[in-house]
Length: 268
Image 1 (cartoon, helix red, strand yellow):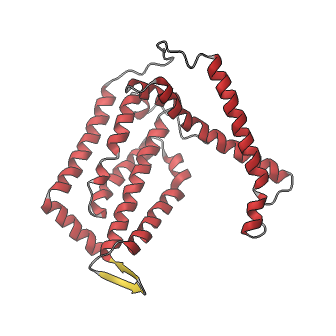
Image 2 (cartoon, rainbow, N blue to C red):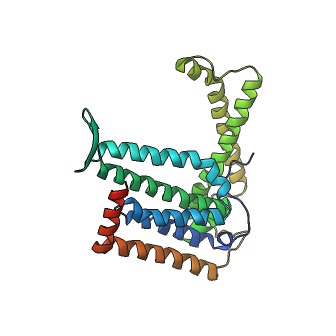
Image 3 (cartoon, one colour):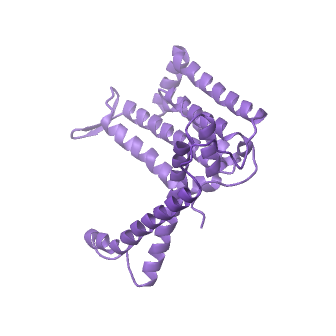
């Protein structure tokens, strides 16, 4: 079972330079902040969702779909309770739900899912070694770039090791579903200890391998793969700059923002 996010498809984004994709990932986080109502961030959310589906990220979206749904629902529930507003919908004791709070919760939920979609698109189209290459091309030291990329590489490995240990313990008769909460926590001890030991062993082996390959050498490093910069990089940056300009125009135009805010309030 592949627990990583990278899916080689040979598509448009996969041929973009890794440094360009890192810059575009940061730019993709900007438009959701230019929003005052759910309808202002919804077009950008649909744009990212369309991009994710057309770039082969559908499998990864199905894997984290429940997480995105939980983020959205928790945002709506929490902000509806804690965000005060003038138009009260209903109340229960000290808890008062307002239309402005619900609208704000919807906006924050869509904003968070925009961040998740942008990250999923990036991870689906970018291998781990390309992340380190892109960070190095942006000026970060190789040690820092490798450490950041190592976090993306080791997380799926630890999850896969935990999954293997769980299956092995279940074949030995360990039942994780019976008993109360305290009993279940005790039953996870035979899983937590092997996972920690496996992680320490893997870290020690990695340190030996890196040292044997001259990881701490100060000489200039060469790259096995070279990623050319082409017209795809320019198109991707222009699309994101256009999205930022459009959302900023809506945000700073009082007339358009007021119409969308009123329309959002009447439909929330």
